[in-house]
Structure formats: C-alpha cells, structure tokens
Image (cartoon, rainbow, N blue to C red; front, side, top):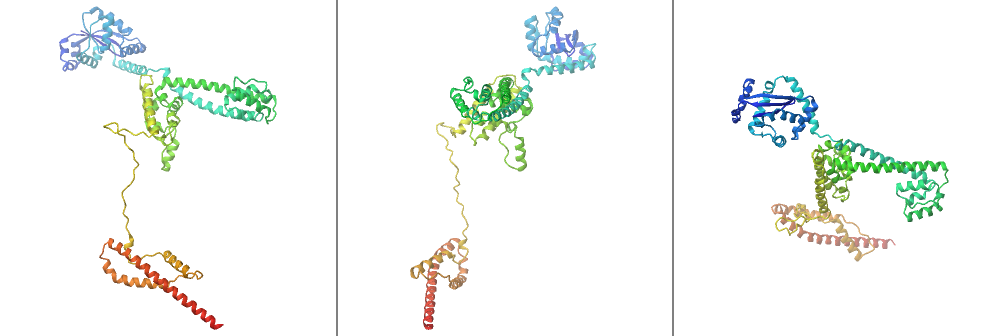
Length: 536
C-alpha cells in the first residue's frame, strides 16, 4: 500500500511495510511513539519538493477544491503508475474519486488511513530526511497566509469602497446642483422673473434659459423639444408682458454658461446613480431590495464597510445616523429616537405616523439579516430579501387596516379587540358621619331669606343675622354633647342615616330663625316711624 501525504514543502509518497498494523486503529499511535518504531511501519519512497510559494499555493488550492494539480499529476504518473497493482491511501475522498477517474488508480479512504496520516504527521521530521524543521515551519506559515487570502476570494465586484465613495459624491453633487440652480434662477429672474413661476422643473428651466437667452427671443425660439405646448404658450405670453430689467449680452453669456454647468452636472448625476444602483445590486442585492439603493448605500457608508455593518445588531441598524439625537435623549433622560437613516426607506415612508416606529423596528430586523447574508453568504441572489419584504408589506397592511387575528380552533371566529375599561368601583370614605354638627351651606340660607323678603317686602334690603346662628349652634352643641356617648357606639351606616334625618330638622329651625328676625326688623321700623312722627 502507498500513502500520498501533502506537506507545505511538497508531496511525499510513503510505502506501508506492515499493513497488518493498520487493522488495529486504536493502537496505531503506539507504533509511532519513536522515530525508530515509525520507520518500521512506513518508509519514504519519493518526495517532490515545491519550487516556490506560488507553486505551493496552486497545489494547496487544487487540493482544497478537490482537483489534481500539475505537480501532483506528475508525481502520480512518475511513481504510482509503475506500481498500479497497489492501493493508494489518500486523506480526501473527493480527491480519490478524481484520481481514479483520470489516472485509473485504486484509491482508498478509511478511518485507519486517517489515523495513519495523523501518526505520519507527528513523526514527519524523522520520516522525511533533508528537510530542516525551521524551514518547514516557515513554509507552513507562508502557505497558510497565502491560502487564507485565496479563501477570502477577493473579487473587484465585492469592493464596497466604491459604494462609499459613490454615495458621498452623489450627496455632494446634490448640494452643488441646488446652489447652482438657485443662483441661476435668481440671476435670470432679474431679466425674466415670470419664467421661474411657469417652469418648475430645474433641468427644463436651465435648458429653456440657454435656448432663449434674451426674453425678446422667446417669440422666435422653438421650445417644443423642451416644454409641452401649454407651458410654451404661457412662456411666450409672459415674455410679452414681462416686468424684468434689461441686461447686456455679456450677462446673458455668463448665465448661459452657468446653465451649461447645471445640465452637465445633472447628466453626470444620473450616470452616477445608475452606477451606484448596479454596484448595490452586485454587492448587497438583498439589502437593496429591502431598503433601496440610496438608503442601503448610506448605511454601508455610515458603518464604513459592508462587513462592519453586518456586525451591528438590528437595534443599531435601526437608529444608525441618529447618534446625536440618541445621546441627547440619554443625557436629558427623554425618549430615544425610533429611526435614523432607515426612515427614508419606502416601507417606512408609506406608513402612518402611528406605525412608523413599529415598521422601522421590523424593517431593521429583516435588513440586518439581509446584510449578513450579503456580506458572508456565497449566493448573490435577492430571493431572501424579496421574501422578507413581502412579509413586511403584509404586516404593514395588517397594521394599517387594523386587522384582527384569527382564533386558533375553528378558524372562522374572529377575535374582538375591545377597549379595556376599568369597572371596579373605588369606595371613598365619607367624612360626613364623623361630625354631629349639621353642615348647611350659607349660600342656601341666604337664598331662602332672599325669596321670603322678595315675597313680603321687595324694597327692604336683606341683612345677614349673625346672632341667631350662634344661638342655633349653641343649642345644637348642647344637644350633641348629651348624645355623643350614645352615638360613638354606633356604626358608620347609622351615622349616615342620622345625618340624613337631621337635615330636615335643621331646615325647620332655620325657617323659624328667619321668621323671628323679620318680626324684629318690622318692630324696629315701626319704632323709627313713631319717633319721627313725635319729632314732627
């Protein structure tokens, strides 16, 4: 039996001297405890050393992908083909199938072969002569670094730096375009102010200004390729009655040059947006389906890269871009923001203000899954993003329509979400039973006195009587003092009943008091009249 063993320095082919020891897999490691014992089990037959690191990397990548490299094919034809009757022990089952298919060699792979490979690796320095341990470790380290770089599969299509730069440039272009267009409208507005009200589109405005020049040329210029017929007629009518000032040809030339700049920047912006859209679909297709090209690109730009964004949890993705508001809310102990850059996504924008927080939270959760799938997954399709977006749209419709979930069981009965109402009655303590003195409002007494006075003597004013009130109080206090020891033994319900019974008695006493005061007033008036008659 021959054994194919791969190292960082080259390919080694060993011949098994005693195949009977391979049957005892559990005790095989004891045969490789010392270099002397190991040389009794296997013997090096051929060693093919790699020329440089590039050849080693090519051979290693071929083995990882289950393919036969050029150097391995050469070794197998040179050494193993001569002894085709013997079996070839290999560590990779997939590689064995390829070797058997292309070179027609009998390959085996079993637990005993795997244990044999592990034992050979433990005594590799003694079995492979002429290979210093220090040189072998350096080769292994270099090959490991090269192989890890290859495994990352660095592709120019997966560079998210281009997205970061493109979205930053797009934002800068938007700012500059706004400044240029405002300047152009203000500048040309001195000459033809009515044009700005008629043409609202910025690009069409700049094209029209460049073609018209002086407003006196509107009647002769053809604007049908820029404007619709109705707006063109309005422009020509406005030019006849315009109240703008006259400007020189030099001013018109500078304004036209500014319009050229605006048109060029606008065309470049549309080209850059198409480039950004294609890049986003290539790098993060699921994120693009979920939140759109611009929002996805801004999220990647804010995080620094797609991989950094994939490391963020969903709660961070939700408020990414609102850090200032978050820390201000934490400092002032107020409500934290519900959304950041994700607010500009179409799903959040089409919801009502009441449900924006819920939708932004759900969208951030699904978007974080899409980001991780795009950053770490091997597939480049957008199926997962489309499925999650469909789920979110269904949930959004349910929230907007205030949909009611079905009850488990029949499936036909619908749950009624009634508004909760607190039905328990809170019993309050009634302090009216604590005092034995009847509490009658002064306002009520005054109203009764006024009614009686109005019936008998409407001209005489109502005078408050304080003395009789004191007398009534003293009488009631004396009566209360006698009844207090009896009333203390009674319950609160008895006190309430007694208070209700005492109220009509108090009213009768008050009526008697008012009648006595009125009689005294009449007597005083009669005395005053008699004295006046005597004086006369």
